[in-house]
Structure formats: structure tokens, C-alpha cells
Length: 116
Image (tube, rainbow, N blue to C red; front, side, top):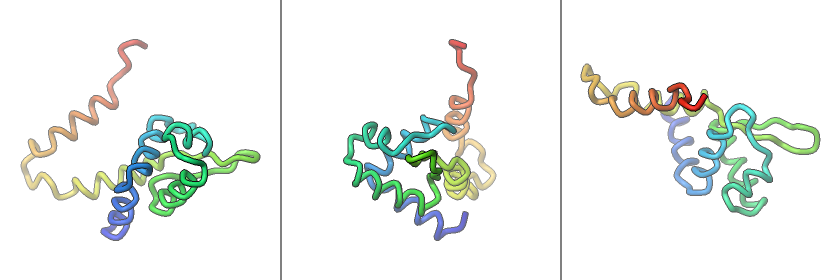
């Protein structure tokens, strides 16, 4: 990810509805969600949600695919990872303790489900 792409992505995430949409889609995982379900989840009108979905897709943070008469949206995990990588690429400068919080978050995210 280059600086312009990162600026576009941060610009897209700097609006509260768009940030909520991305979070909802991250939770939904690879199956994603239909636009109507996203509208309900973020408590926004369908026209407002459509506007924000288009903005997020242009920024590379989400993707869409047509399924019959509806459009299903998913988080673009490669784009989101690229944004995190852009931020963290030069961060530790030989001091790994500087990224301990990121490592802890990744470990918690990927930990096996204790209820499984």
C-alpha cells in the first residue's frame, strides 16, 4: 500500500457510519452481508448506507459481489491488512516492545475458541 492509498483508506474510515460498516463486515467474515442487513446493523437508511458502501469500496476496504438480485459486501481483509502494515512497517526501529499491543491483539484474534 502506498501513501495515497493509505490516505484514501483513512479518509474512508474517518466517518462514523463507514467505520461501523467495516467493523460489521469484519465480524461477518467471508460470507459478508447483503446491503439491507448492513443498513439494519448500522441503523442507517438504505440510501445513506449505499453511499457509504460505495466510498468504502473505492478505498479498497470492502468488496462486493452480485448474488441474484442483491449485492453482498465483504470486508477486504487484504486491504485492511495492507493498511495496518503501512502503519506498522517502520514502527519498531529495532524495538519489538513497541508493537506488543499489536501482537497481543493478533494473538487474541487468532486464539482457538475455548467453547469449541
